[in-house]
Length: 173
Image (cartoon, rainbow, N blue to C red; front, side, top):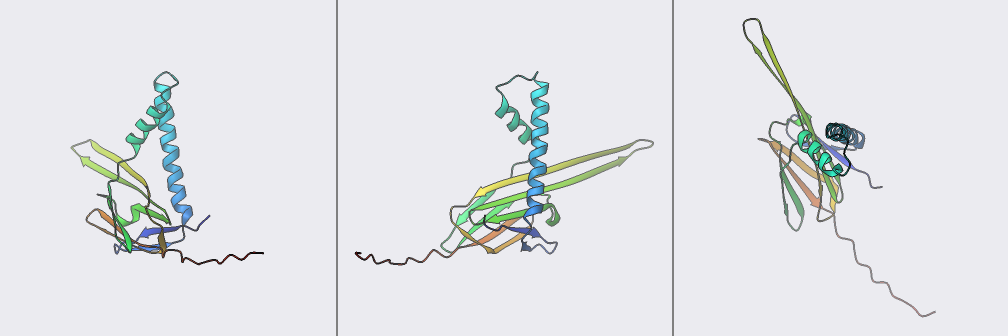
């Protein structure tokens, strides 16, 4: 299995790539477990009727994960990806890059507190994103640059050098 590079966005808004596949897969596993629990709750709430497995799963996904809009452009030397991640900070995101795959995960929690005369009102909201994108070309995972600015995550991924063609001469034995 090829080594994976995970980009961790630093507060200075530049991405540093490190070999930390454990963190990404832990986030992915937690998201998967949350969706599975919610899908079972939906299944249980509908009287445990079989035949709606996918519908229950997709409903759970839509409730727990927010869509991540991605734009990808391809040039001769690189692939450029822009993803909308409004409200997510550098510490909220994790990026995993493989030669043919890009994975973006993020989780943030917001708190709202409102005080009146004797009542205290608190609200918490947890947003989570997960997006896996199959790349149309092999990229060099050591040369990925990412920046986060104004809610837009920009990734510049250099393509891997094409394999050299070697002519093989056949001989009659």
